[in-house]
Length: 119
Image 1 (tube, rainbow, N blue to C red):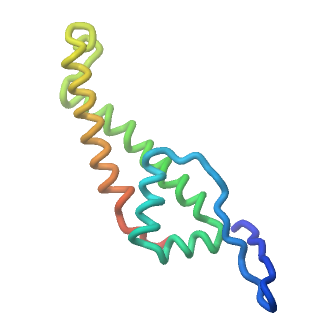
Image 2: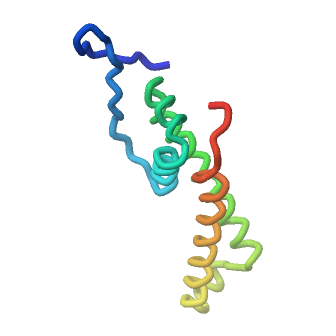
């Protein structure tokens, strides 16, 4: 657990809850938006413990790994190969876009927008 800094306001010490700037990709930003809108209690809990960035980076890594794995599985399943890319580039691009959209939808449903339990 990281050290929390406090600021004195009158007679009280209040935690200095500022979020460090980190680079989040599409999945990390989606999870952050979800927490702010639908699970504000967890968002405040992670923020007050200074663990929000670590949590978001873990979710982002999990989503990235799942993205890579699912894209490769769909490419094999739908027979999207380099040979197709050389023969018919338009069809290859259309199929890859379709794969990306399917994978993004799965990841958003399974990771970005799922309820967080036991954090």
